[in-house]
Length: 333
Image 1 (cartoon, rainbow, N blue to C red):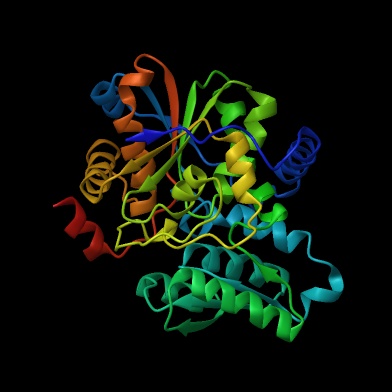
Image 2 (image 1 turned 45 degrees about the horizontal axis):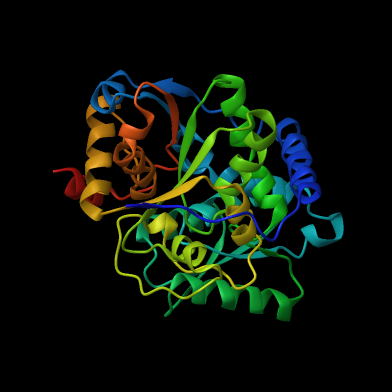
């Protein structure tokens, strides 16, 4: 079931204009290190849904997810005196991998705190890229809060996966690419965890293509930010296991993404685990791509609201591909 997010609060036009300028700057400065990913028409998904479905292939980005954009922008803008001491982050995997690769290229040491529920595949990938990974017996939000505490104690920059305007600006370059590749979009479907990617995309399209619907998609098992938007404040939400580990976890208190999502999202939609599995299966069947659960959340959200956009041109962000093969095969069987 979809729910409206309410009226804009907490951010003004000047702030959004400043964010847009930061996204525009990143769109130019991050090339060629950050790839411009394809936006491909899916004939099968279009036939299945009645929409004109375009897939934004962020699963083909470096490290297998969109996170490399925000991480690269943050490292690019890091003051010279902070580079040698390194940065600290918290991640379930994709943000940590992206930051590790961006840091490796710039000579910036990276330490990542993660929860005990993080994907073993993603933890191994972070370490392979040179990050120091510290696992904690807590949930993703707990790991995030401890990482921020350690950064303060050690005097190192903390790189949030979403609660950072420079990271958001990097993710927002997806919005510029969408406009350049398909300037006539009616809606964009985005899986949401902390809200950094959707905030950036929406802030870009607010200027480039006003009126484009921005639909936030969440797993019903773990919809922390979506429920916070409904409540009008950041709240704790009881979560259960989800295939969408990339969006799992609560929202940091005081996160800037909360008012941004209040101001910029058109609507939200929750999808079940079975609908996530179906989204993974449909993309594998139609496009021959492996995508992770978070990417399938956006696919499932589009499928759930397809009747609303019948005949219209919609983009779905395939945000990542980082999933164990056995887990993927178990989901799509």
